[in-house]
Amino acid sequence: MYIVPEREIANLMTREAAFDAVEKVFAAMATGDAYNFPVVREAIGHEDALYGFKGGFDRAGLTLGLKAGGYWPNNLEKRDIINHQSTVFLFDPDTGKAKAMVGGNLLTALRTAAASSVSIKHLARKDAKTIGMIGAGHQATFQLRAALEQRDFEKVIGWNYHPEMLPNIEKIANEAGLPFEAVSLEEMQDADVIISITSAFAPSLMAEHVSPGTHLACMGTDTKGKQEVEAALLAKSRVFTDEVAQSISIGEAQHAVAEGLIKEADIAQIGAVINGTNPGRTSAEDITLFDGTGVGLQDLAVAASVVELAIKQGIAIEVDF
Ligand code: NAD
Image (cartoon, rainbow, N blue to C red; front, side):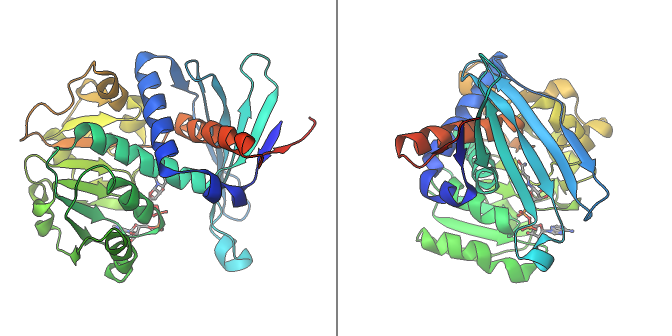
């Protein structure tokens, strides 16, 4: 089997490779060629840690495995390592033998950024010029950097619950040669594309803050109880997701469904748009909303891609196992 350590991922993986891997696996999920296993997530009663497994099998890409990991809130303070920790394990679907062990921390950030980018590619208006960010933490920088590659954006606007964090995303905008403006939530009406990536448990962005024709990628809500946007916004939108079962249980749509504002059947898989079986945006006035909940198959797809690159470049460590 091969080992690709976390320290090698930054030199190996590109945003383009992550985008391609995620777009392909979303497409495979929509045809039924790939499916996610039920997620296990446990409070282990040690170090306040949340630990779990996200796995799946992609019959089209022949990728089988799981991501094991979670959140250790004391890591940074006690040990100077990041709080989110994960490792991806890949198995040979023909034999069940272990195939690879891959550092999953940076890959998680890249696959999450790729997901909102895939949604922008397939659902945002072609003439989108202004991108709005709700959130300015660790993941926001990845989302913005990847999103800027999808359209000829001319301006970045941003709002964050903690305004002192906004320079994090201003830096990314400026690196891309774009102006940045800190705005109020009302001024998000100027955005053609909005990405929300926060850990909020109450909505910030209301339906009245979003103009017709906007595409939203809601990426922060990945747990029961979290919420970034008003449920009424989903009722006004054409709603897409990575996986419907997660969208209605742990994603942004959980609230709109619970309140009876939309039904499960109103939510489409982004993969169907990629495959051309769902039209996606049907007019310049549609509000499209991608509920990106984060699925195990995304992790496996980028890990498989990085293993291939590592083997090609002679960086993968081969061990007898
Ligand atoms: P972070 O801690 O670096 O940043 C948190 C962000 O949330 C900051 O912008 C902060 O200001 C904002 N925030 C905190 N409390 C808030 C509140 N009460 N109201 C509004 N905003 C608030 O975290 P991160 O690594 O950037 O991750 C952000 C979120 O994305 C987390 O909830 C994480 O679980 C989620 N996430 C989702 C996926 C996915 O696949 N969908 C993948 C990775 C992370």
